[in-house]
Image (tube, rainbow, N blue to C red; front, side, top):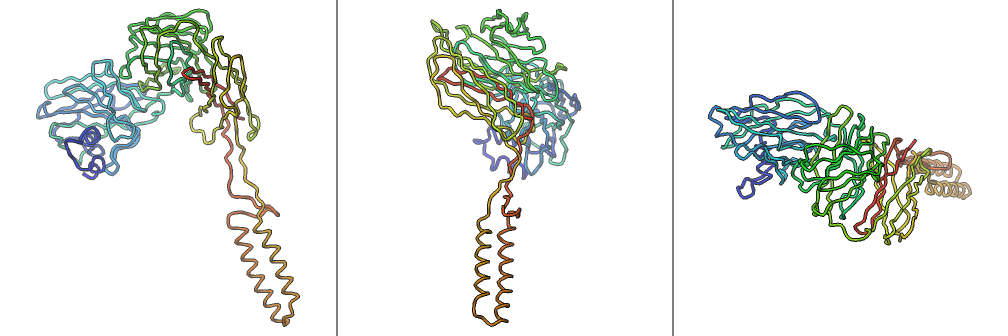
Length: 519
């Protein structure tokens, strides 16, 4: 019961949702399944992939009317009776009577307020996984309950995971001495959304800058979905665009959200439309840099699609394994087109190559306003780091917001650091040498008896050596007349980086991606 107390504190019905409810469901997760309802099978109990339909079968000898909920946890660290559920897991609870599927927050302490219902197009996501209601179901046959739960995993959750299961009856009875681990799964999701801009904004047309990363494989396709609801995977009545880097093909999903139409080529003077949006060949482009694909999607929206929209991203690697998450990466307020030419501007950039770390490098950012734009632009930058980078470069602008009415350039500074130690002269040591010399000279010339004078000199020498050691060896080491501090600076990690540069003028946003190579 110690784990139960750690998770929920003192029980009260009024405060039982959602944190205490989650704790009750999994209070025996590390060592328990219920006394009256026990899992009999999980398919697959081992496997690998970026998405999977898990089928869990539970049997209750007292009848399925006692089964209240079925739960599955796909986690990297086994739950423990001391700390409860691990954070950053894919932990879900399937309520038998209603078909509602709940998903734990990243902290593992409570459920998300959003849920997905089996048999609908609803979804629920955290940073590890997404539950797809449309591909999930629950059936009852005799004393057996069978739950089918479809999960997709994120690239950041890749690796071998343990699977635990728990069935709870209506009395919430638990057996604290039974093990609940039922299998393992190797999450192999690889394509990961790394950046989108704007992640908030408004307008009737926009060029979205997206960055996707895949350090282990080759990216086959990437997608951008702008939709009305944050709780469904359906692409119906959405603006869902796909880009294939190898062929430069652009696809747009149909209104039903069931299939993509014929493609157009990026850079061509053609476009694709459904009832929600138009994607343009001219203005849509992509660049591959290192393990990243940078895609600029040029999109305009129709009046019938106005309102706040949710932005999600996904992709597929060279094996065809897709990485999907319904976790919102941004929102965009679609507004009705205004009469006349709307104000806008575009950004372009030059690549950066750092041959010698420690020397600032620069990229020239060119601002190209359209003929109606007259405003001030603020520039920001973000370094997109490869995975496992210890010391990335930094970026900065030295200009305040600028007024732009014609093509203008600004300078982006990319700063790197060489491994170094800070050299400092030690005035304490130098002063001690001066004082020591003067003191010894004074002793030699004092009118003291010969024997006493040499005893005094010997005592002073011992003290001087002690003081010198204390001042010279405490935190530094001697190197001639210069003291070298023990504080060092890490060298910028060599590799390929992307710096996303964004210009902001009110609700108008434009972004360019700067490729940075550090040798």
